[in-house]
Amino acid sequence: MPSGRGWSLDHLSDAWLGRSHRAAPGKEKLARVIDLTREILGIPESHRIAIVPGSDTGAVELALWSLLGSRGVDMLAWESFGREWVDDVNDSLKLDDARVLEADYGTLPDLDAVDWARDVVFTWNGTTSGVRVPHGDWIADDRQGLAICDATSAAFAMDLPWDKLDVTTWSWQKVLGGEGAHGMLVLSPRAVERLESSAPLRPLPKLFRLTKGGKLIEGIFRGQTINTPSMLCVEDALDGLGWARDLGGLDALIARTNANAAALHGWVANTPWIANLADDPGTASTTSVCLKLVDTPAEPKRIAALLGNENAAYDIGAYRKAPPGLRIWCGATVETDDINALLPWLDWAHATALQETS
Image (cartoon, one colour):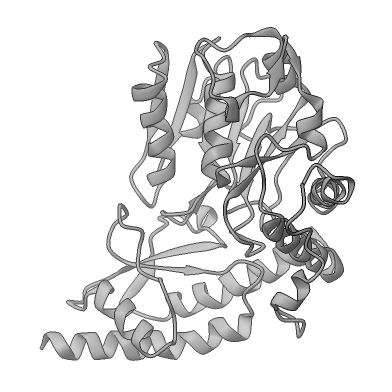
């Protein structure tokens, strides 16, 4: 964690280890994760919040399998994860009425073409493309379908309009820097009504079941998880949420993220060999900033390798399914001073990679 506090295993010394998560102290910790999440993100009391297995992927899959099929669905895809949800709907769920609105990396599909008489599945921020939706105004207030949003690299770094979102998912890993394995699921009253009124069109694995006898299993939304959670990860999530609250909540997290992205984007604007993958600055991500090389024979993989060898930056190559380039995380746990310290290293690594090609 930043701001002088730092992260340490010592912060996890109160973890409820080696004992049942169903005991009162374990349940209290799980419920505390939900309560702090609601407080920091400003999620309305009308919305249910659950901790679910399988990270953000598990949360999205749970939503798709449980909710889709009673009406047509528009699938929006402009990066790898959105395309994976398209594949799931077409190849696994085999829905008869699924329409795909797709765009290349760096751009968004035509949001005005979305039909809100249908369910709509989309990512808020394209983690592997560095492109995000600019706001929630394009989501219809009078929608008949559900707005199902994968917000895993947006939650805690961008302002999410809860009145516009019926299903929202993310993981503990991204903006709060937590450990993996667990996802978060937020359901609006409209999503709950769908669950209780429309039986799934397919048998559901136990890990996906949110209802019993046609009624929502309310305990899941009070921290009574479907499976056994890692209480060490739970303690880490509590530590991250406590840090976020003490820092000043969502506004402070967004401000930190924006400052990091501004520092990086400012360097990009003055560096001729690199550019933002996002075509429109208004849709450029502030968390997973994706960059492309311009008019240079230097290889982005070599640049990333050089930086890793020097312990200057790790894992900043573009996602394996994305166009070749660099991807730099600017979320709230990053210090702007560290972004600024990285910039000369980027110039050095490019110059070294360029020299190696000559």
